[in-house]
Amino acid sequence: MTAIINAELIMRDHFIEDAVLFFEDGIITGYGEMRNTPIPEGCEIIDAKGEYVGPGLVDIHTHTGGDYRLWQHPIPAAQFHLEHGTTTLLPASFPRMTKEEYIQMAANIREAMAAPGGENIAGMYLEGPYINPAYGSNRAANPWNNKPIIPEDYEPMIEACAELARVWGLGPEQENVENFVKAAHKANPNTVFAVTHSEATPQQIEKLIPYGLCIGTHHTNATGTIVNYPECRGVCVDECVNYNDAIYAEIISDSRGIHVDPYMQRLVRKIKGDDKIILVSDRSYQDAPNPPGYDDIHDINFDKWGDIAGSKLTLDVACRNWMKHTGASMVEAFRVASYNPARATGFTDRGEILVGLRADLIITDRKMNVKTVILSGKVMKEN
Image: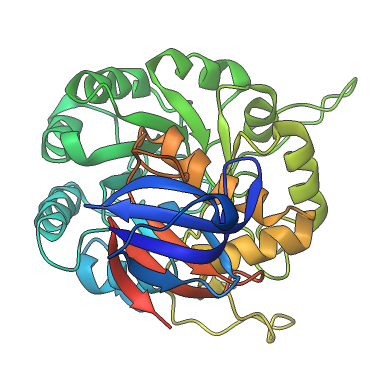
């Protein structure tokens, strides 16, 4: 048995100060205030030195780790995120990948999950291929643009990805997309769906909720254009995500609030509450220089046209930014970066400190500088 002592435990909705936490065989077995909780003889001791101990971070949407694309080099990319406290990771596909690349990605991820170094990989987030070409993919060649949604294309991808597909992102306005959703849901009833790179109406989105649509991909980014009618202001994807309690809003919280303006982050938090927001890194890789006026931006990627092209974030940094922009506490930051993403994607064995759950834990200071990472009871990083 191992005991973490002198800890400030971050529970789902409160702190336990001056605490001890026990785990054995990869499972949390107990916790409590040190003054009331005796430590059995023979325990291995980890001294948190008064720092925070929270559940490992759960990043459900990220494309790269360091300079490695997760779909091609999953293990070194996953290790990069593990160093930053992400104990559960869903590698994300790129919208412009070919059918053959989707199938190869599934093979690569499956192999990595069974290999040393891939223990924090837990499935895939499939961002595409059936998205709106006007939002985030229209400037470069995309093999899916204006291509019909037909079984000959999607059935091989579904078969290759079925048990790994935790999230499948799509544009609900695409013709025949419901046939694809039904087929993917039949292949894996645990797959959830996300409205992604879309200009769908609320009605088109809500039609897919019964099949498991429960996520709004990078909320307020590539999420449609509001049509202003002569008599009123229109609505789009963002309003639907805000309105529906069944849908989690993904937020990319960079240091300057470029992806999502800090005021908008506070507004979304007020509307959705801490229970229906998911922080994601959406980390990607581009080698284009920053456009004029953005020379000091260090955590965002830009493409060669000067458009935002994902982030350079890790989830620990995103938590730090979220607290800065919204005034959220450490407890609330862990809620949106651990508990919510775990529950949205069907992981009920992690995401919070609770007896019987996996001992996926991190020790961090108040600014989310990660000191120690514990994955299934194994110390993976220790400072």
